[in-house]
Image 1: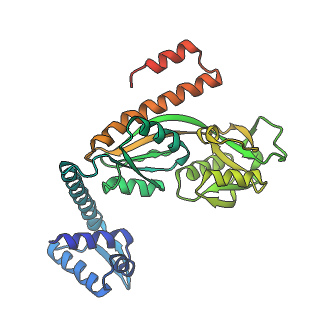
Image 2 (image 1 turned 60 degrees about the vertical axis):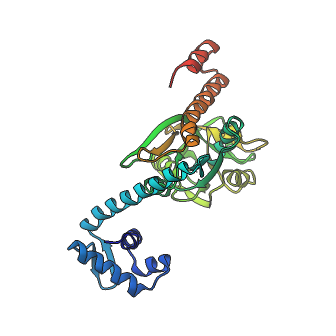
Image 3 (image 1 turned 180 degrees about the vertical axis):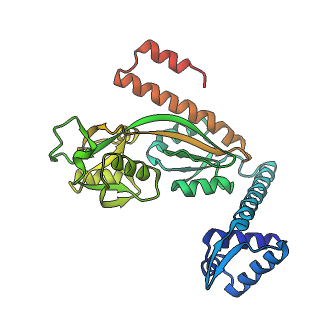
Length: 316
């Protein structure tokens, strides 16, 4: 059994399509098919169910894929450990997010304290982030949906309210709050399918008894806000995103029914080897969001100064 065989198998197993896998691996399809057949002969069991030209990973294949991915993850961790021993990339942090609006202040504050650190950031869907964690390709994920999996830890950071924003001349612009079913016939401007925030808001609408009529999909909250301001539809917006927007003329509405909230959390693989910079980042993120939550509660008058002081002093 060769490492190249396992790499080829991993690609075919993920795509369940021999032609697409061959294109991705940049090899001839007959050569790829022979490699997979030899691997199955070595193992003494078929890893795929084949029907005409279609292939599908079977039960044995799924179990073997799990072991192969864990093996590659261990090899990646070994490479990272060696890189640190050679003093290479020890100040790099790789980060995937579903909520990019929190990054400028979070990373800016961290870099003020640790100016030599370099960040590589990805905007990914939940499924993509989970795969990157499993494969050992990133240090952390900041997501609005819990990421679950073997050896993956997800730590809640803050719970925030989700609002609806409408154009300044909208029929509901004079209101402070609504029930979500009141906008069931409105065109919605939304995040792309696959992103955690989109899945969450789709669920809110289902709870209110309707499916969003999507007029526009995108992956940039600032663009979505601009389209709402121009009167092209309504949109969901998170509390933290709204706080970071300046100069918007859209009107924010609190949703009274159903309860619309989300919890932001930090995820990482407990099997990953972390560089010193990455080790410093985790407690920093915890402290940062604790401070954000305390400041938010103070601003809203939901806690007084003395209680806020106690929250700030509370150990993590």
